[in-house]
Figure: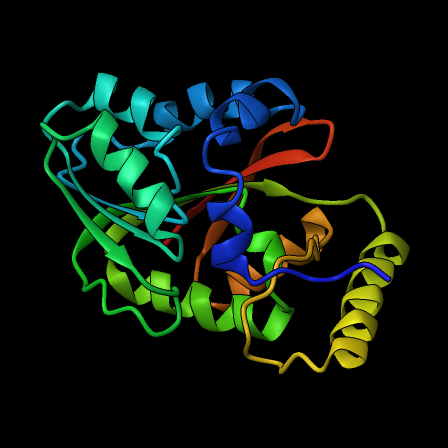
Length: 217
């Protein structure tokens, strides 16, 4: 039986190979890291990075906006240490916590997430999207690059298997264990709009790696 790993422990065990794996093995990520920076507003002063990991997406953002202030949130301290090594001279505040309980503040011009939202159930995503919406300025932008699937059938299969494994292994609903539960593009867009975003646009899809840009106005 597949044993689920706690989220932080899963990524801590893979921290040394993470960058190479994401860039070379996950279709669309190499392109996504570069493309994401292009949608960050030119006048962005404060950026929220959810699931910042080792900061792969920040390379392009810092190249575009070298003085931007970044608040990064991640469950894995080992990943945050790697990020801090890379960008020790940048204006970065790092929070080792989960997205739902972390107090990352408000007044961000832009928020980003890269390959992290597919780990949560829909009701948790909606809760988080509302939190992101409220953390942004009135003209704020949220950019998400994530694993999304084509059909409801595939989506339902992932969620059902996750539920089965959690039940068999006695894992609670609100415990953070690593398992992919990707939504369809349509359902992901619907969740963002339900949370308050008035405009959501698909701007990239390579294999299952998909980028959405959500705007408040």
